[in-house]
Image (cartoon, rainbow, N blue to C red; front, top):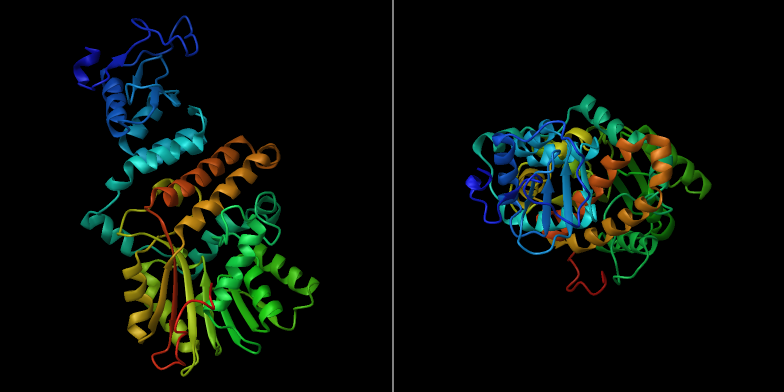
Length: 425
């Protein structure tokens, strides 16, 4: 009966075979796997076929995803968790791990990477219903505050534990692979400023400024005057305090408000890591805000955002537990929704996904170093949730189905763009 699933490597029950390298099973199993459980297990093995993975149910029923030696073992503690994973692998696996109903023997991050690479080719395409639902992604004014509070207002002390000293929570730029995270984040800020051709006296608007590191960098090192908008009260409070401490209060203004309420006029418009929270239903509105504010003759801007090669459904686990309301767009969606309706000229597009993979590796390493502190302050479930989130984010960039786009744009009749990228690099 166990081989009726026709999995090439078969299913093995501990009553008939034992893995000598694994833990000894208890003498009595609380609930034996039934045919439907074994069918679900076979389906998971098919999905992960070829990976050095073994999946073990609560009663010891086991399946291997490849005939070779295993690097990872996934242990599923109960039937409900198994069925949730079979019905929705993204949500079921993430919640099972977060809640401690699923354990991984081996490196969790390496397992998530391996699964992401194996499944990358299956992530293309969306049904009409999924595409219609995705088109509605985004948040109202009230929703934007609620979403920001869920993620960014966890407390500055939490992010201080594992981000760099400037609290930069976006993709860094690594001049060399062995650069420190601090050096790579400074290099990213310089890179953005060079692309925008910042000069003393430039008026800059920043939409979604995090803890204010880029805004302070533009004012301190390039002589710009910056106004930056953010709906996170925790981040704005920290940004203002740091600007005051650096003597930049007269050149940097942090506004606790939504990007839709940006007013005034600027020479440069920049958004780093905010577009993921806007949603396709609000792209044209963002374009109108940029068009309304940006200088008519010499205006220029940069959008830095996580995206995709092709439209795909966003992770339900991430939307539920980490980033409510988020949407990762394709390049076409951003160009068509934000820039093209207002005649902006795209002068450069760059994909920095390799740099985000390196950034996330450093975040993961630092997070692991401070997990005892995180668990003490926020609990074990929270710690597991964030470990899984960081692992999944790295996997997306390493596998290539997540991208990090930087799009530089100008008005239609600006000063000539540099003939080469030499000054940028």
